[in-house]
Amino acid sequence: MSAGGRDNDYDIVIAGGGMIGTSLTLALAPLGLRVAVVEATARKALEQPSFDDRSTALSRSTQRMFEAMGLWDEIVAASTPIRSIHVSDQGRFGFSHIDAEEQGVEALGYVVINRVLGSVLQSAMNECEGIQVVCPARVVGVDLAPERATVVVGFDKGEQRTLSCDLLVAADGANSAVREMMGISAQKTQYGQRAVIGNLLPEKNLQHRAFERFTAQGPLAMLPVADDRAGFIWVVAEREAERVLALDDDAFLGELQEEFGYRLGAFSHAGKRASYPLTLSKAVRLTAARSVLIGNAAHGLHPVSAQGFNLGMRDVAALCDCIADSGAELNVADPGNEKLLARYADWRRSDQKKLVRFTDGLVRLFGSSRRPLRALRNVGMLGFDLIPGVRSLFAKHTMGLAGTLPRLSRGVPLK
Ligand SMILES: Cc1cc2nc3c(=O)[nH]c(=O)nc-3n(C[C@H](O)[C@H](O)[C@H](O)COP(=O)(O)OP(=O)(O)OC[C@H]3O[C@@H](n4cnc5c(N)ncnc54)[C@H](O)[C@@H]3O)c2cc1C
Image: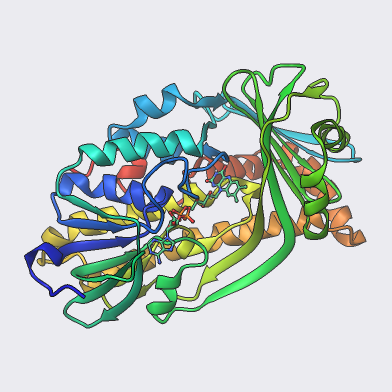
C-alpha cells in the first residue's frame, strides 16, 4: 500500500466511471476541484459495460445538461430525435400518443447508442485538467471519518493505493459495493424478467417515432436510431430469455414481429442481441459521513420508462449545484460537509421516490393479467389520452422537467 501524500489527496473521489460517474466528472470540471475517478474496467469504450450496445433515450433535462457542459453538439450529431411516442397495449382497443409539438418542444428526447455516448464522454475527459483516472482499479475499502474520507483502491496484480478526499461519490452501479462499504442497504425487488436488446431494420421508417407496447410478457419498446434502424428493448420472462436469445435471426424476428405487430411493416436484418436482468433497487439512504450515492448505486429502475440514466443525471445536476453553492451559502469550501450532503439528499429524495413509484407502477399495471388491474389499465390507456393533465404530467416526467430543477438541468452552466 502506498503512503498518503499530496498525490493521493483529492477534493472528490468518484467510485465508478460509467455513464453517470463520467458525466459527473465532466460536469464538475469548471469548479477546478481536484477529482479522481476510480473505474474497474479498462478505459476502452468497447470494453466498458456501461457504454455498450444499448440505446438510451436522453430526456430534455439531460439534453440541457450536456448543452451547459458544452458537449451537446457532438452528442446530437450522433443521436436521433424522438418527435412522438406511441403507447399501445397488445390485444386491446385504444392507444396513446404523446407529441413533441403538442408539448411545445422540438423533440421529446434523443436516442443515442451508449457506446457512442461513451466515446464522446471519454474523449472529453481526456481533455480535462485536474482529473485523475485510476483505472483499471476498484474501490475495495473505505473509512469515513467525520473530517475526511479514506478510499482504498485495489489493482489487478494485488497492489493497493490509498486516496483521501473531502467527498466520496459512489457511482458504481446497481450492485454497488461502495454503497455497502458506506453501510447503506438497498431494498431490491426481482421482476423475474430480462430485457433483450438489439436492433433491426423495419420495412417502414420510424419517422422519429418511438413505440412502447405492453404485451402479455412485458413491455416492448422500439426506438428510432441511425441508418433507418430501430433499437428494441424487449422485456421477456426470465425463464424465456435463454430460449429467445438462442433463436436464429429469422425465428427471433418472427417472434418479435408477433409481439409488436405490423405497424412498421416486416422486420429484417437483426443485429447483435444481449440481455439484462431487471431488478428494482432503492437505497434506504443517500448519504453517509463524507459520502453520497448517485445514479444506479442509489436507484436501479426497470427500463420501461427509459428514465434510469436521466434520473441519475438529475442526481448529478443537483449534487453539482450543492457543491458549487456550498462555498458561498454555507461559508465553507468543503464538498463533503454535512449540510451540503443533507441538502442533496432532501432535494433528490422526492424526485427519486416519484420516479421509482411511477416506473414500478407501470410495470405492475401493464404487466398484470389480474382482472381488476386489466380493467384499470383499459381505463388508464384511454384515460391517458383523454385527460390532458395526466398526459402532460407523464410527458413532463419523460422529459425530466418535473419538480425544482438544478441549474445544469435548466441548461445554465455552473460557472
Ligand atoms: C436495457 C436497458 C435499457 C435502458 N434504457 C434507458 C433509457 O432509454 N434511458 C435512460 O435514462 N436509462 C436507461 N437505462 C438505464 C441506464 O442504462 C442506467 O441507469 C445507467 O447506465 C446507470 O449508469 P451508472 O453509471 O449509474 O451505472 P453503471 O452503468 O452500472 O456503471 C457503473 C460503473 O462502475 C464501475 N464499477 C463497479 N464497481 C466498481 C468498484 N468497486 N470500483 C470502481 N468502479 C466500479 C463499473 O465498471 C461501471 O463502469 C436502461 C437500462 C437497461 C438495462
